[in-house]
Image 1 (cartoon, helix red, strand yellow):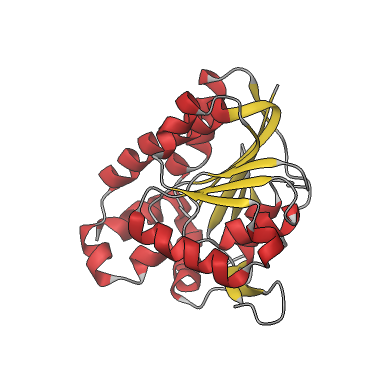
Image 2 (cartoon, one colour; image 1 turned 90 degrees about the vertical axis):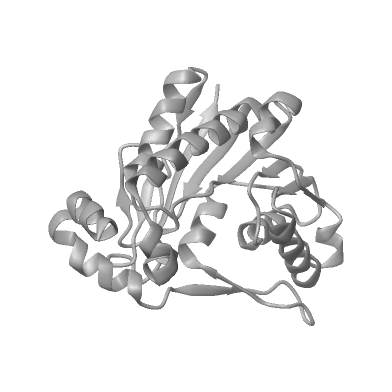
Length: 252
């Protein structure tokens, strides 16, 4: 099957162990922000990606593709109601879930700093130019772990889709960079396995937007792999966490 051939070529001898780890249970941590509020369970690697944005009180933050909402919860917990967080997702169904998560898991004083919107992420760079101090782009991606555990999605998977997604991811990252204020930080993240959707997207934006530079993430989880541009957390080495790729870029 094309999926297995593709990733065997990418990972070589590592692929059998990685494949088994991807089939297993993930490693989630509980996010709970107060008595009477709903807990939210988020992969530890996803928590790491959101925390790597370095959000603090007073920041103007955009979570460009925010649903279902786990990373937005992490960001909101750093703002603690001081600053602003635009949690955006263009899908109406996913946005409903996002709103439910926020309303049921965040304290009221933190929720007041969050605005849920439904714009096309590609348009932020045009209409919100240099408006945000911190941007998280958790880009739509191949979601390989989900594909692997879904016979329906596995049957229709193709390498062409990976290439198409990488083009969309590049457009979203360009938009995020243009919406970022000078001195601001963007985290680009995916749950994809292929470098086409990870490092390659980052390398292209560094060429197209010379004001951007990589900012190395110094502290990384045990078992995480450093790549040319960022960090890749894969479940075979990281005790079930991931897959999550993230790279941090700074403007200016």
